[in-house]
Image (cartoon, rainbow, N blue to C red):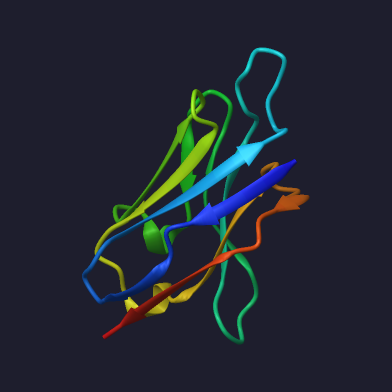
Length: 117
């Protein structure tokens, strides 16, 4: 299983970013992927789950990002996306694409998101 994130960067508060995660080796026999999502870790804090999407396309979000972040998955392209709007300084962290949900055994190298106020 390989997970490769991209799309991080620096943005001012209120701005937007889109993170992408190209994944391979993580599909069922039908071609769909199992539950996967995004985690983040801010300096001095524990890693936390930001959002997840299951094999049926149902999504769930951490309370602080609800209404601002949107998770989507393109099974044809084997890519997971995290659209982040109205970014806040507290969103500053390294973001990781990870799977499967709850276990997070597989994780990418991470991409840095820095939000300045």
